[in-house]
Length: 522
View (cartoon, rainbow, N blue to C red):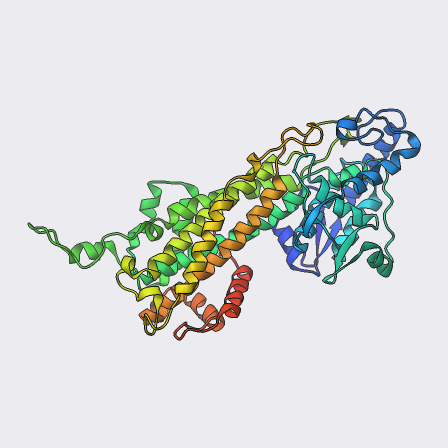
C-alpha cells in the first residue's frame, strides 16, 4: 500500500485501507484513471437512453411513487429533491470516523462505473475525503434497505453545499467551509442523487472499522489469557498441539498455536507429565494440595476465542466483498446496453455479519469478566488476596470497585447481544416490506466494542496486580512482561486507595491504539 495515497478502482479496497484512511489524516485517496473512463462511459449511456426510455429514478418518482413520470425539464430538480427529502435524520451526529469510512466506501462503489455518475461528482467526493470535510450525519434514520437512504442523504447534502460539516474539529455550515476552500457546490445530474444514497456504504464503512477493533480485541483477549495462565501456573497440555489436532476447528487451533508461541518464553506453566510423576494413586481416598484442572475460563481459551476468530475471518470476507460491490439500483450496465433493476442495496449481508460479530464479542467480554472474577474472588482462586488487595483487606478496597464496572458493563453487552437484523418493520408504504436494520446493527455493535475494551481493561489491571503479588515478573513470557511494563507506566500498582478514573481512561485509550498480534491464519 502506498504510504501517501490509496488508489480506488472499485475492486481492491480493503478493510486495512479503510482503517488507514481513518487513522491517518494525511493519507489521500486517488481514483484510478480506468475507473474514471468507465464512469464516463456509463454516464454517456445513461444520458442517451434517458432521452427515449423510462428509467427508474431518472425520469420517474421513487418507491411507491415510481409510476409518476417526471418531465424532462424537472429531472435535475428530482435529484435535488431526493436529497433534501431524505435528509431527515435525527439524533446525535455519528462519529466522524464512521462518516469518513462511509464516504470512502461510497466513492469506491461509484468508481466501479455502473452507477451513471459523472467524473465531476467522483472528484467532489474525493475532495471531501482528502480535505477531511466530514458531513454531519444524525444517528437515527436508516433502515438499511434501499440502502442507508437517510444517512447517505446527509452526506450527499454536503456535496451540494447544504447542511453542516465537521472541518478541523468544528461543526460549521457546509456553505461556509466550501466558500473558504473555494470549492463549488456540486449540481446533481440525472440519477446522481439516487446513486449517492441508494446503497449500503454507511453500514459497510462502520462494519469495516469494527473488524479492525475486533482484531485488536481478540489480540488483547489472547494476551490477557496468556498472562492469566501464567499467574495461576496452569498446566501446559490445555494448549498442546495434539489436543487441538483432535478437534481441528480452525480458529481454535490458531488461538492455541498463538498461545503456545506467546508462552514459549514463560517459566511459570506446569508440565502435566511432571505433575503426574509427583502425585501417586494410593489404595485409600486422599486429597492432594493442587488442582488437577483449571476453571473453564482459563482452560478453554482456544475453544472460546477460536469461534470468535472464525467469525471475524468470515465477516471480514463478506464486508470486503460489499466494499467492492455495486449496491445501487438500477444498475447502469453500459457494457450490455441495458439497465438492471434489482435489490443489491439490501443490507442483510452486512446486518447479519455485524450481528454475528457483535454476539461473538459479547462472548469474548463474558470470558474476560469471568477470568477477572476468578482472580478477584479469593473463595474461588484459594490463593490471591480478596480483590487483589495488596495492602490491608478490609481497610483498603483493592480492585473491588473496578469489578463492579466489569460486571455492569458485561451485563449491558449481554442485553445488546440480541440480533438487530431480525427487527424488521415494513416501511415506505410497504414497498420496503422487509428491511435489514444494518446501520443500527453496526451502531449497537459499536457500543458492544466499547464495552469490551472497558472489561478487558479491568481484567488487565487485575492481572497486573497478580504479577505484583507474585513478585515473579522476570518469569513471565515476553508478551506479559511487555504489557506489564507498558501499563504500569500508565497505571501504577494499586496499593493505597486513590482516585483513579483519569488513569483508567488512559489505560482504555492505550488498549484501543495497541498494535494487534500478528495472528497467522493458516
